[in-house]
Amino acid sequence: MAVMKQTRMMRDERGGKPLGVKAEAGMKVEIVDDTQLPWTKIRLSTGEKTEGWISDDAIDKAADTLGPLDKDLVARHCVEQASMFGGNAFYLMAVAQLRSNVRETPPVGSSGHGLFAFSAKEWALQGADPGYGIHYSAEDVLDWRAQCTLFAIMAAQAQEVLAEALGRPVSMAQLLLSQILGREAAVLAIETPATRRADLLAKAASTADQDRRDTEPLSGRDAALLAGETGQQIIERIAGALQDAFEESRPFIASAVERYVAGMLQSSGGVPVSPGAINYASSRIKPARRKHAEMIAAKFAAHGYGTPQQIAAIANAIAESGLDPDASNLKGERSFGLFQLNQNGGVGAGFPDHVLRDPQRNVEIMLAEIAKPYQKANRQAFATTTSLHEAVRIFVHHFERPAEKDKQTEVRYKIAQGLVA
Image 1 (cartoon, rainbow, N blue to C red):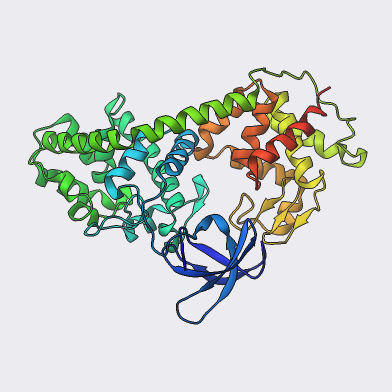
Image 2 (image 1 turned 90 degrees about the vertical axis):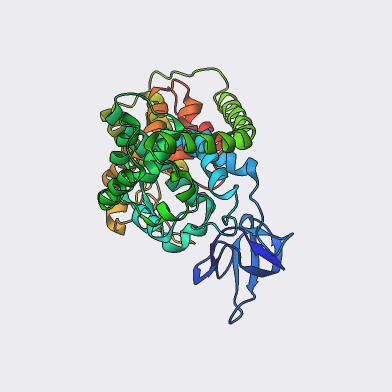
């Protein structure tokens, strides 16, 4: 037997159509065929037996129960999410350590679900935010990567709001306090440290609806952290708990940060490239589709993006569709147009086929994705780089997001090089 590490929708064939049956995280499964990686065929062992294909990385074939997560893997994901949303990876990892000991299920006796011990109501309240491009289902609470992404977004938002209210940077303990009690109660505890615990909890309860918070964790998951009699004592208690979790998890984040930085330096080659113009006569661009390349460049220029960024966008559109606005991919997805925007949970979600096939609208939807709040750090890095390779890498990894991102970065960089005049 094997065990599911993450929840996955089973498919009728490798990369095929969903069967409408999920293999849930923690579920025991039987391996039927794992000779055609990265897909593996499994059989569910509960209820009516069902066979289907899922991505191999979602299965632990060496165990039949879930144990602790690979902390190096979680740390790498925390670093990526912190970079994407402008947060602190050390904080994300420390809270995961504090709440679940970096496990997909919290310790026995703990309330909540998953890596960050979300309550079901908390997940429902926070799990859908069109501004950040997230639309998590109730079942996604069992996916530790989804939990990490959502908590990173929530932390970045809470940090910005609290820092603005206080007029100064905030500590990790103050940030976690605000995520537990909400901004108003956190400000009260920080600025009036003698405030009694009962008054802080009353304030937290009164603002829960406007903050989209669940009050159940106040007496469950977070009760031990709120055991102090005053705001000052609560902050000190949270700081102590976070410090212990930080020391336990710090080496994993430090290593992940080193790898992340090294990877960025290696991908940019250390040599900035500043193309002066775009070669629309390149063999990479079919003459009949030159107008689409010129339109992409013009729209990106209108949004303030320079020539390297325009070339990166054109190179991605060439790789995705050959600059054919009528291109589509209906195998395992529903992707249309110049940038092959996917209706199934991708950038094209919520848009009908004909809109995605409109070349002007397709580019505008991609630009709208880049402009979303959660893309702030990526957008700034993309807009300011003078390295053509780095512009391509950011577009591939954070905006287009194809399979095999590293491989596709190199493929699309070669296309981009051919577009430099």
